[in-house]
Length: 280
Image (spheres, helix red, strand yellow):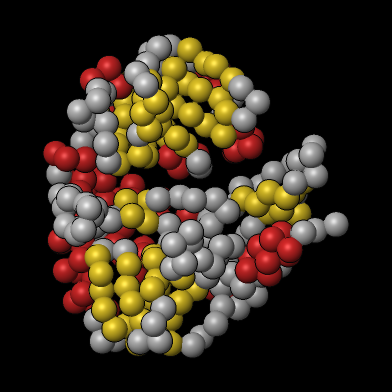
C-alpha cells in the first residue's frame, strides 16, 4: 500500500505537460520501495501524463540566475539547472553569476510567467520548484542552459525535461558559450584535487583504476583518494560499471571531502561521461 509521500509524488507526476511528451516510469525494488525515472526500466509502468496549469504569475524580483520572487510571495527555484552564485551573505561571487542574473532580470522582472512543476513541488528551504515559461512560450530554464549561463543540475525524481536540458548543454559546450569558455569551469584532473581547490561545482576527469561497491553505492576509483560515487539504484540506466575501468571519465558535481578523500556524487547518467581522445 502506498504511503502519503508516494501518493503525492504520483499526483505531481501526473501534472507533467502533455506538450513535453514526457514519459515517467515507476517501479518497485525488492524492498517494495517506489522509484521513478525518465529512462525505461524492466517491469516498470508508464504513468499517465496530464496537461499543465496555464495560470500566469507576476515576477516581482530576480534574486540570482535561478531564483525569483513572485508577486504572491512565492520564492521560485528553477528546476534542473544551477547558475553560478552572486555575492551575498556568507557566500562569495562565482564567475558568471552576475551575467546569469542580469540576463534573467532582463527577461523576467515585472513580467508574467507560467510555472510547471515536477515530482517534487518544494525544496528543503520551502521554495517552489518549477520550470518557468514566459507569455511568449520561452522555456527560461532551458534558455539559460542554451546560452551557457547555467549548467544542468539533475535531482531525481525531477526528470521532466532532463533530455532537453542535457542536449542544450551539449550544444552550449560545443559552441564555447558563457561558462563553457570560462577557465573557472574547465575540467580538473582528479590527481590535482586538494583541500584548497575542491570547493564548488567541478568537472573532474581521470582514468578509472578500479571499482568498489557497497550496499548503497558503487565507486569508480580515480585513485585511493578520489572517486566517483554512483547510487546503486541508478545502475540500470548506465552501462556496466566494469566497462569504465581503464577508461578516461568526466564526472560533474559538487565534490565532497571526507578526511583525505574526495567524492564526486553522481545522481543521474547525465552527470558522467566517457571521454573521447580529443577531450582528454
